[in-house]
Length: 365
Ligand code: F6P
Image 1 (cartoon, rainbow, N blue to C red):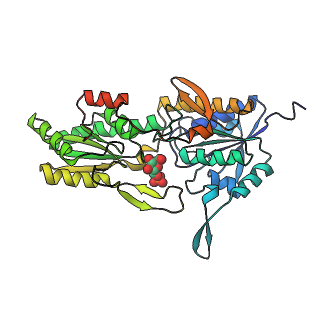
Image 2: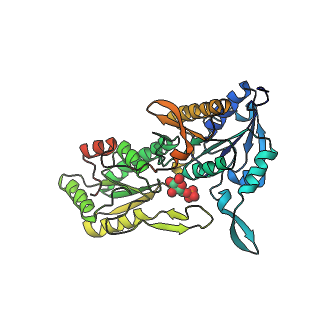
Image 3: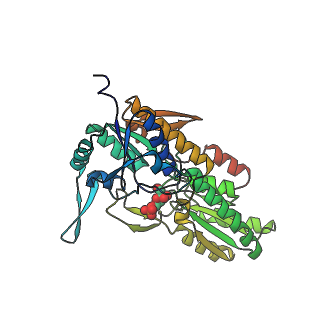
């Protein structure tokens, strides 16, 4: 009887936007699963594959050599929330509840558990699936690092690396031409990428959503640098940053997505205002999806592997409804229900903010 209740068949999917380290988690899940005698099914294109019934069996050879590869071998989708599923009908998109299809496929594949690798949106879906009787284990990913229940999400370090490298390169050209360069980075409603990337790349000004900025403070900083003989400045602005008296810049809206807002465009606004008000020649670089692509950093490879291996361990122990989480330097687990309750935002007393201020970086406040 006990043998029958063992966890034997595991589904794994990657949900939401991709980020470096997803493949490392898939590998971290699949390789040890064999030792537990489990079969792993890779669900194609995230929750889309779970709704539409698309999956393949993953064996050791399928995950061999993918540790350093960016993206996800399984594919992903950020428009496939089963409770908010876009279906085309007579040329129109109709938002439909497809949660019953998910449960039907999970049962049809005889899965004992589902490991879902994703961000905030994915964890919300996991929580609802758990309530429908699907045994879920969450693995937190996102370059934005905005999940409160884990000290870090994998993917963030790789994005910060891209920002830091970009700032290093822009530093030399900004300095040669005595220009201000405004670099726009991702992060949605959280400023972690701008803060950590800006700190690592030596930005002079960092603008983040959590600290609405004053235009005057930005001009002052640039002009003060000029008085000190520094005729160039680097501004690292998060896509969600906004002035005290203004709103976030929304590039477009997509109603198929749970959060329809696509942010972007603040760097152009900031650059134009700086040029008009300081007289400094200004240029813009938008890093965009460069921050999500390519090979994970060694730190992210290690974290992803630890997360994957820990997730399969939780599955073997039947600890469902849990999300793996980094607490200090240890991988632990938390209730998914608690993990989704709070977004992690930069606070005035965040240590990196203190350090940035200590070395003279302005937040425009
Ligand atoms: O959540 C990750 C993220 O890269 C955000 O930083 C960004 O706002 C968003 O996804 C971009 O989404 P998309 O790939 O759909 O343009």
